[in-house]
Amino acid sequence: MLAELEAALERRRADGLLRERRVIESAQGARLRAGGRTYLAFASNDYLGLANSPALVDALCASAATWGAGAGASHLIVGHQAPHDTLERELAAFVEPCAGARALAFSSGYLANLAILTALAGRNDAIFADRRNHACLTDGALLSRATLTRYPHGDVDALQRALAGARGRRRFIVTDAVFSMDGDIAPLPDLLALAQAHDACLVVDDAHGFGVLGGGRGTLADFGIASERVVYMGTLGKAAGVAGAFVAAHPLVIETLVQTARPYIYTTAAPAALAGALHAALGCIRGADARRAHLAALIAAFRARADALPWTLLPSRTPIQPLVIGDPAVTVRAAEALAVRGLLVPAIRPPTVPAGTARLRVSLSAAHTLADVDELANALAAVAADA
Image 1 (cartoon, rainbow, N blue to C red):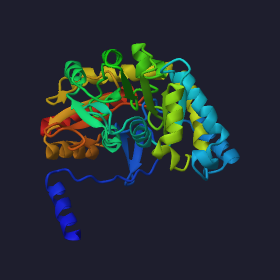
Image 2 (cartoon, rainbow, N blue to C red):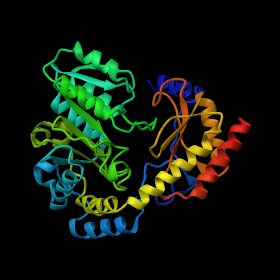
Image 3 (cartoon, rainbow, N blue to C red):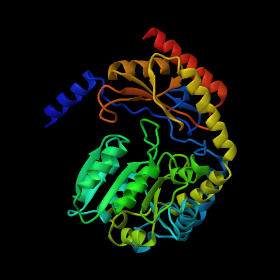
């Protein structure tokens, strides 16, 4: 086995697909320290610049002093502490995907999506998933044992045709809200209309929209939609700056997850101290209109400059701004050349993205300045000229 593993890893290296971890020696921010050097970083999902916010750090320390370092057990044993309960109530009221919604906290978005699909869908059901959904949605669909149909990215007509011929006791339309490697937004009003027409449930992964879009309430609020058919998942380690995730939906959906979702039942609860920090994060998100306006200005400035590059800038009004280069090895060399110039921009390669679409994933944050964006644009132009 070891010889086979070694050969497989060498093939990945030769194809430009080997991944390596970079040890970060500083707190998160627009500038990161690694290997004794400081870099201007466009790699984090800390979209509002809250991960190292003094307000969140202070709240985390204060909560830890009261509630300790660990929860000690799963939520259904003795791990569900008062800060968890308070956080869930606040999240449900803030996002409110339907009237009277409840929320359920998870340790990660991956666990939350596995819980949704494995608890609600089964062998006699049908799942219709966007082909570019995050891996955890695909894994959850496969683990559910429901019939899985993957429709072309954002293709509402193809989804409608698939739904028209579908069989199954329950039907689920499953989609990212903001697609993590493309930055575009799912046509949620159209998907909800299809869900209503075909008696389906709409599962929305808003990992990259929560905190940023809709005044911070997420992509549903951005579109002005709500429905009892929606099961909403948001993560708390990106724009919220801390860790974890939550599901918000009709109370009957949430109670079903509590009673039957294995990723919830058989996982030790996240520390209550994190829930305390997230209480502070929600306050920051509510009052972050200025941060969101600044972030929008950064996005506009970057797009104006990046449009002149020889690479394909994908359409996106979110902090995720992908530059498609194509060849994985060329993309890695571009990222390495940027690092030499003191900038961190990740190279994203298959299988994370389709073959032939390797890209630089520029991720903007409210912690950046317009001068930072100018520095990035100048560096990208220089690297492109040398490529």
